[in-house]
Amino acid sequence: MTARVGVVTFPGTLDDRDAARAVRLAGGEPVSLFHAEADLKDVDAVVLPGGFSYGDYLRAGAIARFAPIMEKVVDAAHGGMPVLGICNGFQVLTEVHLLPGSMIKNEHLHFICRDQVLRVENADTAWTGDFEAGQQIVIPLKNQDGQYVADDATLDMLEGEGRVAFRYVGWNPNGSRRDIAGITNERGNVVGLMPHPEHAVEPGFGPDSREQGRAGTDGLGFFTSALAGLLASA
Image 1 (cartoon, rainbow, N blue to C red):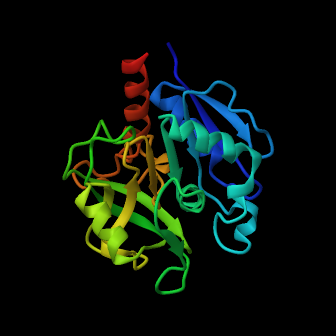
Image 2: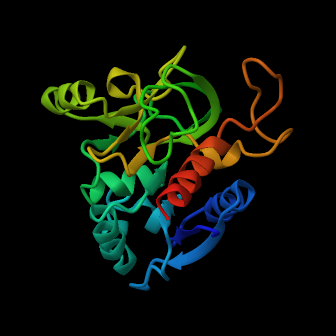
């Protein structure tokens, strides 16, 4: 069985082809999904890639939540389908309330692009099973609306339920509350994060790792995790 992973394209999406390539390198079959079509094409998982959906008008992800494809994604996520939101995709997941909190402008009000160290806080989600809790990975980060915010009650809930999936290490690049880089829903099938794992899937082309120099493959584990979970449940 080859798992089919849908990659959604909105007007302004930038990283859909990168996400599709990551799926292919992990051993899955990428399937293109268009924002205006209410059809998931029998996929087994969905990736909402990075970019500037609908130009980030109003606020990042605010218009994408009304795209016909998102009604199907939300229903599928509630049914247990693995869904990964990367950068703008994370913003969309908060807008459709699959994940709590919100994303606002970076604290320093500038676009930022850098290789970012993350600590894996939860290795029990659909997208983190190939990692270990406490493991540090290096993933590219590029955003201008990357500051994760939520009220204290929500933050305490996320901490108490183990739903912080990733945390920034060494430096908080955008002012996110409690150094949060990514979170998961209660069931663990929906994960959103600001850094870009799809840009760290090929040796020599991704960022330097802490142990191996320019290995650049720390992001591949996101996609192999989901595919392994899907095959195990088939």
